[in-house]
Image 1 (cartoon, rainbow, N blue to C red):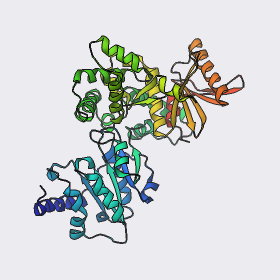
Image 2 (cartoon, helix red, strand yellow):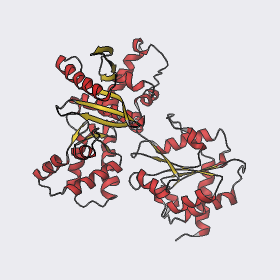
Image 3 (cartoon, rainbow, N blue to C red):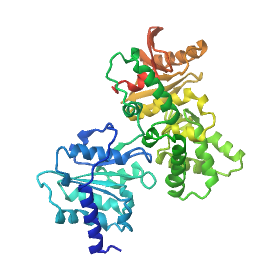
Image 4 (tube, helix red, strand yellow):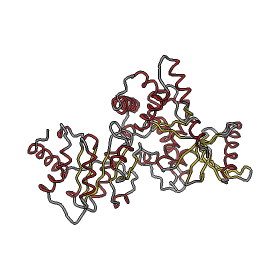
Length: 440
């Protein structure tokens, strides 16, 4: 139960401590700062340990250039000094602040709520603050262990802009390694070797900030995998059959950049002794996506029936997580590269599909804008094998003809060139070139 005097004193102490807090050093990440001018709640969501709190600090650092420190309130609801939380802490927070601290009334108040899902009935309080306090801007984060992006959107009923926080991109990793990309002739500079070395690290261990910064990468990744499995999925959804779900998640982790068939997965699980229905499997896959562990990409077809019945392709949130649980990871660089390309396309907020025709010609990524396919991307790690190159280009040309596109991209390990085939332009780019290119 909320003890008014005691708990108000706790809030006063924590706010005072915050106003004296020196923000830590951080890697500056992309964020649409124009959102801060909108009259919407901003929510930062993503897989655990992707850097949501540090992005919040980064936003605060920018805001401190425009408004006084005391106009920006930050509170972390995982701070054990606030426990046990009743829900009243958020309700009285503004009153406690206004009664005990000076602030500039001519400037907006920024309310930063970290791990807001820990507050009981937080949704109603945030909605009330949004509706009644006209000079307040709210930014919140929610842990995937208790709150998904869809739940934030439905809870706030059209009042929110959602920003997805991914692990570091390759460009952000290069920034951490102090490798500048300003040289226009970087392909011919000595930096190229450093970039290629960083790419190998990125393919193997991914981009989780702590993993990038620490030495014991594999151990950290294994711990992240266990936390997502047990805290974000099994505990959250009260899954009883632990061994079944452990095996399913491992199957998903090992299926990255591959077609995922519910029927085949059911047969595989049953062959090793598990009884599970298709409906349960579909529900479990929804849990996996809600945790941001993996994503499903549908086939592109104008037929709804085809989109529903064809297998989807699976990609994981970070290739390092797969490395933590897969034994033959180093043999799969083509698939790893494809997964990395998918993640970059997600960061660039593209509408992504794969394409396959009745002759099993396949293109890895179709990018749709509006009602039209605008871009085709094929990932072919080793283009030196003649038959491999022929097959990949044959698939691209067929898709280019079908969608009336004159240029397509092939992403490779070490080959870049522009070739003309049947009047079509095929642009070959190495993976590192494509990853550091501008996002247009």
